[in-house]
Length: 167
Image 1 (tube, rainbow, N blue to C red):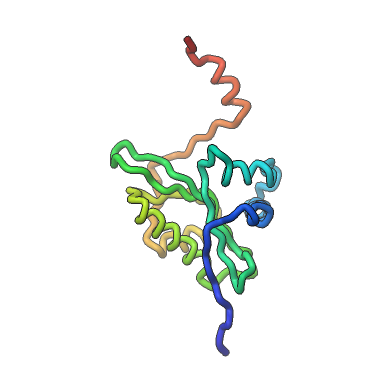
Image 2: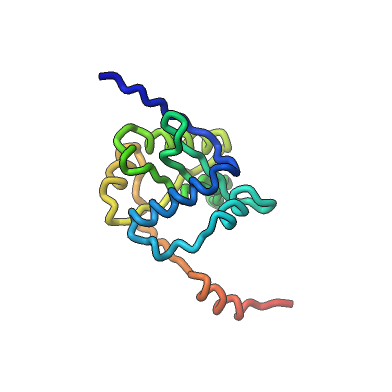
């Protein structure tokens, strides 16, 4: 039996904001983090397409219907003297997994990183997400076991910012 599904990837457009936000909510649900989603369609649109946009996204479509996305931004390596591509989120709807769509989205990001002369392509993965870890390792990605990610939430930023020395 032949597979007649056509998968394509394109840059996100303003018309995709609600769809991407919906996929973000589904990702949060999968990661058991729905309670942390406070983003709105308006916030996402401003972040993706506003005057001070610092993120970008690609959308994966099966037969013209969005089934996944990847959202990324650029960081910088002082050691390499080059920017890097940082994948913030990648998600394919569960019913569309196992078709190579996640790999295709990652390959597209690798192509973007190459075109942008990035020295690195990085992302984080939850330590319990064994299917994702196995998948990433199969592509040649390596865990940065000696590094620990630290996070400061908005309330802690507010506290620490009061200690800034201003002129």
